[in-house]
Amino acid sequence: MTDIDVLTLRAAYDNQLRPEIPDPVPAGVTVERDGPLVRIIGLDAGGFLTYRDLGGLAGDALDELIARQVELFGQRGQSVEWKLNGHDEPADLPDRLRAAGFVAQDRETVVIGPVAPLAAALPVAPEGVRLREVTSGADLERIAAMEEEVWQEDRSHLVTGLAKEIDADPHSITVVVAEAGETVVSAGWVRFPPNTGFGTLWGGSTLPQWRRKGIYRALVTYRARLADQRGRTLLQVDASEDSRPILQWLGLVPVTTTTPYVYTP
Picture 1 (tube, rainbow, N blue to C red):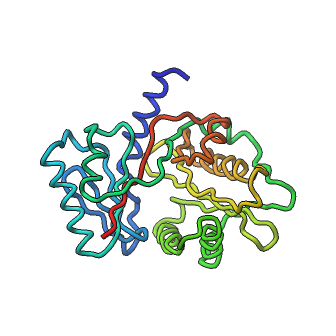
Picture 2: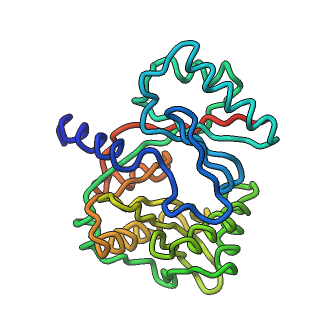
């Protein structure tokens, strides 16, 4: 793929998916604006800060914007994530976030690719594993338990966050589990942001003993078929270093990076 194609995909990502605001906004979630910044509270364990761009904000004005978020979430006693993309301006934004007390987490790669080739492939799971769409609280609890086993940290926020999205609009998100008998071995979800050509893929954590069996690939192709059925033409994923090689092999292209910067009071 040429540089021009990558730039075109990145522009589609910026123009269609950013800022990442849930639509419709689930009950109990607030969306606030502070200049170019969008502040989302109540969807996840902590707050979330997103934007299309910062509108040229720099220097002291940018520091003041960052400081307001630190003050607000400090008063709330709640952590907050500033989602920083690799092509965001100004170039010294990471330095300014660190100076304000934000800590960089693992960097991921934003990959984008066409839906059609993946949707044409059959989502073949290994023998003994089935893929199933779920909505119930009990199944969301099973997903959180699987993720807690994988990551060795609390993932209970997934239960409430996904349930809020499903309740707000069951057509905006589809959650899929991979099961071996009664055990959830992997899970992922696809969101369908309104007024875009995208399906966006999330999740994909897999129990260690079930990796390298094609389960993640099957979940990707299954969700690609769902996106195709909705008339979506592009898939987007914030890919970890574990999933990025698989997604590139499946035809998705790196267009930028994304790094969560987290402030914890």
